[in-house]
Image: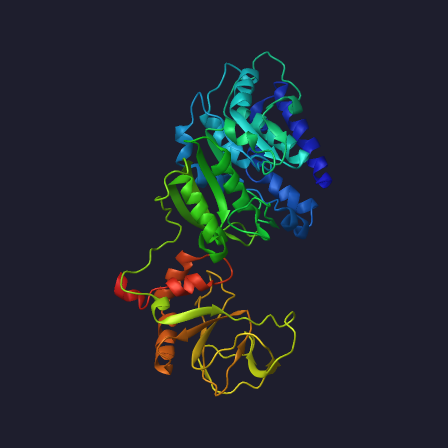
Length: 435
């Protein structure tokens, strides 16, 4: 993040100018801009978008930060310690700061905040920006400058440090409140991870660290990718989090920003002992209908063929891919052929395209497959096989998937780009019957 250094110089200059007692009113608009999204805009200007995605460096911004903290900031007090274990340039900490106690002047206020605000990030540039912006946040709150000279920016806020909170987990023990918008990048799960192996979303590891290492009663407020809420891969993670916490709030928020095309939700919980295994978090909204769902009538699978990877050996089969199959129609003949020795499907069945977004007019677009021979199916499709083996059930399923209320239900159930087996399996059969 060296490209960010010139911006840090401008921040330091602004802190210095206002700190010398120059008329704050002349700088108010500039400071408001610094505290409301300017670092993110500057980072996008100097760092390629692909590099930002690779590092997960997308900041919360003031609007999302305020939405996440709307309830919890009222619980901050004289003895609170707020930790952001992935603080970036400090958006969430800045949203908390005005609710903390103040001193008689700027220097004493920053000293108090320095004992009550903690943060970690692996980029030293972000640590410096967080500290400088917190100074400006105190100025914006009208804290008088006083006569005491301010320390250098890097000497302020001794609990905001360059550190990985995934490996140095002692930082969680000091916190009464943990606020975080962690990176959403894929990373390798550590060897002692009990709920997954291989690559997982880093945000899941941050929440695991919170509930494992924070003390009982600590409040966690997190902005998280929707795949953690609805993805089947994270079912065991959800169970782990439930075993060590009590839910306070689950709130769907939609797309993170125009630059980060990821749907997010706000999770607020209280860390508790793992002794109570009966707690449940309402991850899925709305709840399953009482009178049945698609999974009661259909077996649901991911298409097993990864075309670029799976060897072309075994028997020849008709082969369907997401490209080229007509939506909402019945396919009786498949011209494409492929060798495949894995699982194939006998007709009739329905395929649904996995790629899906919440702003699509219809989330689950289906096609009936009714071929004479068993069919190999690409993994970009979800396969729904009727348990009664009839094409009539397949036609009825298309009617269910077409209903606007089914799309509305799926938009609440899962916001990420791909539909999952569990989201379709749990979707209500005839949503209008359950309202």
